Image (cartoon, rainbow, N blue to C red; front, side, top):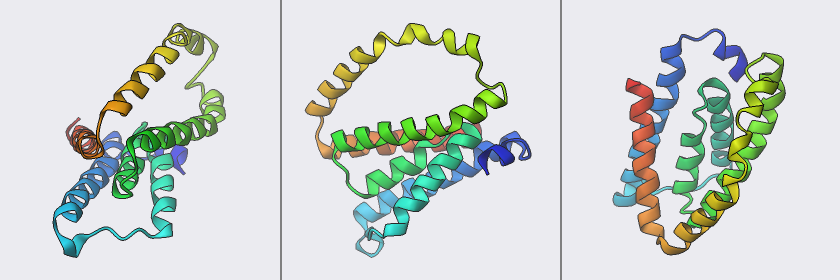
Length: 159
């Protein structure tokens, strides 16, 4: 569905739809933390919706992070679990997108080869990420993720 819409929706819609969704979820997260009436109650379908929204947003505009980020924030996921879940989720999503991107020439051999220089940086990034996650407490992590979520939503709307 994402690939089909990518070729038919105007560019503005491709940014505005996920941006608006992101800001609505961020506002709900803020409200649910402060107002008892808005307290989040997890439902099984929330995970399915977040997964679908993230995969769809990723295929549409490489903007799949906001739905899964919002979902994991609402679940009060520990930082290390949050990051690990996000990594595995997007590994699967990007592997699923790869054949379509190759078939449509979005990715080709030369483009892929130009990114190989980054491979040696992966272990350094993993180590730095683990160190940061070990040192940050849950509340600060949630506020950081929420701030990044709002920034992403605003960027998608005005960018």
